[in-house]
Length: 236
Image (cartoon, rainbow, N blue to C red; front, side, top):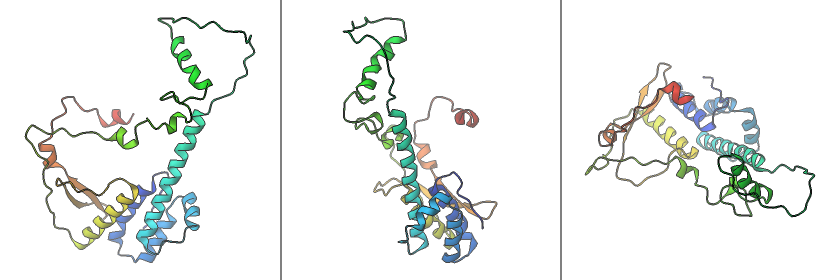
């Protein structure tokens, strides 16, 4: 078994690894070596300084946590560089300038409106001082940006999940998948009475693909009245 993380997130790499590891029959020591060898070289260097993991699952969770921190740091660095104001030397008469009147039908008005915030180092989002736009407290969190409601039909209630029988390899793959997804932040514990069935189907390469049965929820969901775009068009 040979896997490579490449440019994908460690969480996605770990999910592929756990799915194939169940079918391999190898012990934890061998799986540990394969997982570590397939990680990004930069992530391997950081893991070399963290020797707290005593099991394969702990090592996988640590790799995901460090990779998430690295990616968040890269996004924050790029955002800070983009928000850093550029200094420009303007040689002009510093006498009192007469405010320019509003000019309709010209694009210069928008540029003039945002220029004071840039010159005074104010937040581009809310206009307050003391912080820049990437760290603005009024900006919605990532969860608020991506969360979306599912509208149900009138008098409909969320369905209860079905229980599927799983074999021993499937149960082990499900536990590894849930543990990895929790560590990556893709899922979170829930106390909701509504649920959907979770099971695995076999792949051509011998691995297991996780599947969630949303047919019960789809049956009571308000249909989207507009046609969905084709996959190639949505990816562009």
